[in-house]
Every structure is written in structure tokens, then in C-alpha cells.
Image (cartoon, rainbow, N blue to C red):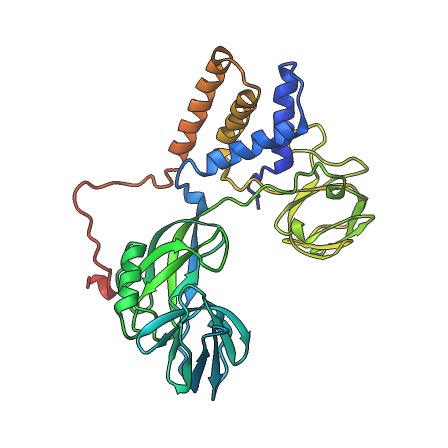
Length: 381
């Protein structure tokens, strides 16, 4: 079975070096790294590439109301009697007498601390009833853009609303329920990530599925550092590879392992020293042992190189290559006359990539679409 071509960070660096040397230019490693990274970000952000669409799921939790509480205004701590706070309490909101207070920290199984900006200014006596619920859920770290949220008990997507509208509704609603609307905003608990804000807050444990546009995998393992090719590797027909003098690390999970045939570190597939084969690293067991995604025939004491994959579809590689060259010229502050010819090639590669991203080649129909759900035996609902 043929394997798709996977470009690596090391390949991109080698292409950049070859381009600069071909023009007789001097270069610095940092300059090349910056150009490759800038080109990579430029390409994966240029369009809603179908290759970057993926599936996500949020699992909601049921509100918690066991026991009663007491609140100390001096410490901002809520102490629970007759129960224990659930694991997700750190991300929850407590409703006391129809007023909402966000939790800042779970101190112990029976004590949580409220956020300073929302905490009550007066203590609350023991024996007070409450409801702890969660309305905000963290989205995946690679989230860029969503194409709709679908709940278990809805035929249609949840309504997307503005975050200000969600806040107003949340403030004025006295109970939880089945979510009908959702807002997207910054995650208050995870720096740099987004979250969904559900309204009303879920009254039961359910799942919410969504298709979203993800970010491309970051380029970190370059294949240039000594640790990326140090020592030799041996395999015996299984997915386990044993190293001698290697320095495998957890950062290499998901990276590409290229296997050589002798004592030379393998390079790209189109080079004079291509790899014998390649695998994806799925686990790092120790500095001298890794697990890969498919069996490796018997090899002994051969060189290798580890590098991150360029997380782009094969049809985007020419566009990425042209973007690298363009970034290199821009980093060197070249005159517009020197860039003109390269810009023509860059525009052509970009246009070809956009055209190739059309994955459907069947008939198309003008006019309104029938969005009814197909039912059994050809009927529609």
C-alpha cells in the first residue's frame, strides 16, 4: 500500500538552504528557521483548507447540589457540608440566592475559593442551599474556527450568539436546562485557548459534537540538532525500535522517524541519500526506546533522523515551497525588482493550491438546497 508523501521540517530547511546557495547568497540558520516558520503559518492560515477540518466533542456535566454551604467573606472560601465538590468544580459557577459566583480554585474536597471580582462581600451562614454548574467548556488547543455545534437532542445546530448576549442571559436565568445557544470566547482558565459558553447551562451530562478548522501542528523538531539523529537504531519486525546512544524525548511523539540504510543520516526522499523507510513515532518509552505506527522489518545499527511533519496536504507543498522562498527574499530586504519573478511563481503556486482544495468534482445545482433530513425508505422529515 502506498504511503502519502510527508514533508518534514528538515526537508523545508534543506530546500531553503539549497535556494540560497543556488543564488550564491550567504545565510544564517536563524534566518532560515524564521522564513520557514513564517511561510508555514502563512500557508495554513490562507484558507479553510479541507485537510485541516476535524471532529471535536465536548462532554457536559450534571449540576451538583448535594449538602449545604457556608461562605466566609474574609477568605472568599465556600465550605461544603454533606458532600464533596466534584473534580470539575474548579471550572464551575455557584448560584446562591439567584446570584452567580465563579469558582477560582478547588482547595480541598469540601472547600472552593471564589473569584475576587465576583465574590460576595458579606459572609453567608451555614445551611444555605446552592447549585454548582458548569457553562464554560474548553475547546481543543488547535481550535481555529467552528462550522457549527450539534447536541444530542437537537436536529439543528445550536444557535451561535455574541458573548455579551450570553452573559446577559446567564445573569438573568434562574435554572439550568437543555442548551440551545452557544457563544465562543477566550477560556478564562487556560491562557491562549478558546472555550464555548453554553446557554442555558446543561442540566445533564450530554455530548456536543462539532466540526472545526484546526491549526497545523507546530514545527519544533528540526532534524538539525544532535539529539535528533544521535546514535543508531535496531528493530526486529515489530513496532518497537531500540536505540544505542540515542536521546529520544517526549517532544518527538508525532514526529517522523526516517530510517537510513547504513552509517549516514538519511535526508529527503528526493536527495542522493534518501531514507530506506519512515514511520510516525507514537510513543517514547525511554531515551533509547520508541514505538512507531507500523512494524519495521529487521534492521541493525543504522542511522536515522527525527523531524516534525509539515502538517499540510501534499497538494499544498509547492505553495509552501514558494512561500519559503518569498519569505527568504523578504527577510533579506531584497528590492522589488528581484522579487517580481518570484512573486509570479508564488501567485501561481497559491492559485493551484486553492484550486486543488476543491475535493468534489460531481454535478452542482443552482437554486435553494433541500436541507431536510433524509429519513428511512427515502422519506424526508
